[in-house]
Amino acid sequence: MTSGRTYYLMVLPALALFLLFHTFPVLQGVYYSLTNYAGYGRYDFVGLDNYLNLFQDSRIWDSYVFTFQFAVVSTVLTNVIALAVALGLHGRIRFRNTLRGVFFIPNVLAILIVGYIFNYLFSNSLPYIAEKLGIGALSTSILADPDLAWVGVVILAVWQAVAFNVIIFLAGLQTVPEDLYEAATLDGAGAWQRFRSVTLPLIGPFVTINMVLALRNFLQVFDHIAALTSGGPGTSTTSVAYLIYNGGLNGGEYAYQTANAVVFFICIVVISICQLRVLQRREGNI
Amino acid sequence: MSTSVLRKAAPPRNAPLLRPSSPRVNWWLTALMAVLSLTVLVPLYFTVVTALKTPDQLGGSGFGLPTHIRWSNFSDAWNLTHFPSALLNSALVTVGAVVLTLLTNSLVAYAIARNMHRRFFKGLYYYFVSALFVPFPIIMLPVVKQTARLGMDNQAGLILLYVVYGLAFNIFLYVGFLRSVPKELEEAARTDGAGTWTIFWRIIFPLLAPMNATVGILTCLWAWNDFLLPLVVLSDPNAQTLPLVQYIFQGQFNTNYTVAFASYLMALAPVLLVYVFAQRWVISGVMRGSLK
Image 1: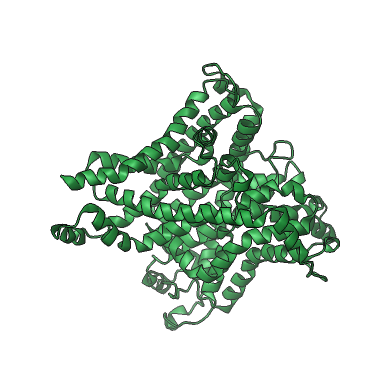
Image 2: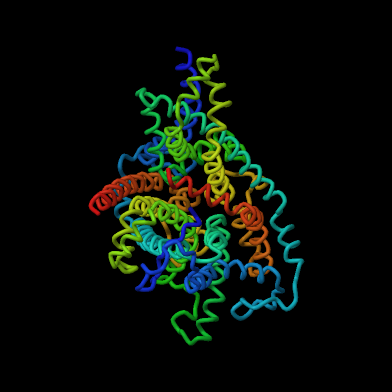
């Protein structure tokens, strides 16, 4: 059958390129992770040494703790805020399209550049305002405080990510039939009750997709760090992606960081599968 | 429907007495949403006023209007960052990535969607889509070596990588859409003697228009705003894109914040301008992607 052959011709170039630029690098990463390659020069096989060292390296542990803490906090905040904004935009308001357009703006802007703007706000404007208001704790830059710098990263990340999630939630809210609200109202359900028992169950799939996508994106956090803190102060905001980049390409730890990447990959796959399972089961129960 | 009116925030207790379809506007909610939208607008306002100031006006909270406008911030930033070259590179990479992605990814998805009953194509579908679980930082280090070795550390290499890495999500979108496209049209064309290529370009590709818009918008935003891929792949300073240039020149802006902000504003302006005019189209495109 000739049309059958045509279909193969259509996909084979894509398959070849995908193998070359996606699958092959994954395998190559695994290969390098078993060596002591510095990114240049000769190298030898060292077995699982890199992996064993990873587990004893506090830099690595710190980066995982920071990344997960950041990702979980940002995911929850982003989704709660986005759902609230989407409910507001879905209400009986004027200028709906304009407001919706405004809330979506952060999604079209480069995080790195927005990050530089926030950097200035955190370092100069916020301390000045805090000082005028007499809030001593905030009168120095939060980005210079090892305990608070991560909050700045969360604020930037949430500010940017809410935009996208609002649109997904709005799409979800439009799938809820209006008569269900009317029926619930006639049964005497209050606003909160209607939200709990009508809206939330019906937009379940959209909550799932938002949680999964947001967590997945936040776990890869890189641009935010580059623009706000460069991983500091100290190493307090060094994310896994930032560490892989910095150690692997600037720090002569090429092989070591490919091992880190392999471990990170396994983490992400496990988390994604768990998350989909849990969220889908919860959806099924409601 | 964007015009559907739902009662959400605290309707009066005697709500059933009101006509359910009455288009009464909740002004309190409108005001609340307008105030909330300031969280988005204030940083943008801050960027504009800072870019217009002279350095000695910078003190204080920085939210005041400029008393004296310094237009030369823009020309300084323009020269310092080689703005025209960066703009051209960003535009080239973005247009290249969008056009190639639309032409190729839709074709691959079509071949897969029409052969899902065959083991090879079904396997291929799951193979591509499973790449969604492999974030870029994981393959970053090997990819850097590989692109350098293949002489792809330039704009063309960047375009190719966007097209290939977009496959996972785009195949997912296109195949979902193609499943709802009836096969009768194609079968009719086939009995009239049209080949598979003709059928795709003449019948299927035009039918894919809504999905093409979605994929085009998402690819465009990604390629235009991306920082990590250009950072690790590009080696020639003349190939740098707009976000990358901001990063490279961060050290040279030093404490010259007004010039830095002029540079940020110029880097953000193109996409903001396009967005102002294409706002509804962009949002509906993104929404369509989420409904698949």
